[in-house]
Image: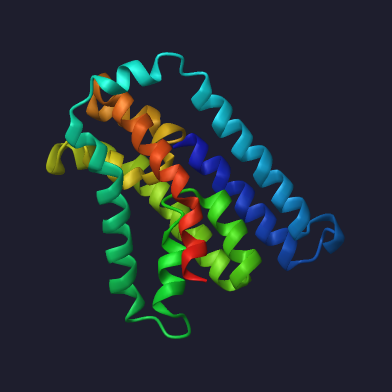
Length: 197
C-alpha cells in the first residue's frame, strides 16, 4: 500500500503542477515520455531475466493455470464493454483500449495519450491506479470470499511487482510463481490497445 500512496502522491503533485503551470511545458513532452517508457520496459525485462529458474518452476504448475491471464483479460474487456454502453463521448473500442493496461498505468496511459488524446489517457491512468489500489487493499478479503486466485486476477499486470507482496502474504507462497507468470503475460498485453485504433 505504501508504494501505491507514493505513486498517487507523484500523480497528484504532477497534476497540481500542470494545473497551475508551475513548470515549463517544454520540460515534459511525448518524446521524453516515450524514452522513459522504454527504460521502464527494459527494467521489467531485466527483472524477469533475473529469475534464473523461472522456466523450470513454471513447468511444475498445474496446466490450467496457463489460462488465468486469458480469463483476466477477457473479464476486464467484458467489464469495459458493459461500462462502455453507459459512457457518452467514447466508443466501445476506446473503452477497451483504456482498460487494456490491466493495471499497467505507466505504459498504457502514455500510449493512449499519444494516440487517442489526454482525456482518454487520463481515464486509462486512473482506472489502472484504482485497480492496483483495490488489489492492495482488498486482497485478504478476496482470498477469503473468492479464492486464492482472485487477487492475482484482480491485480492484472501488477502481480509481478507492486501487488506481488500482498498477494503472497494473502494467498501464500505457493502462489508466488503463479503471480509472477500472470503479471508477465498480462504485461505483454500492452500491445492490445493498438488493435482498437
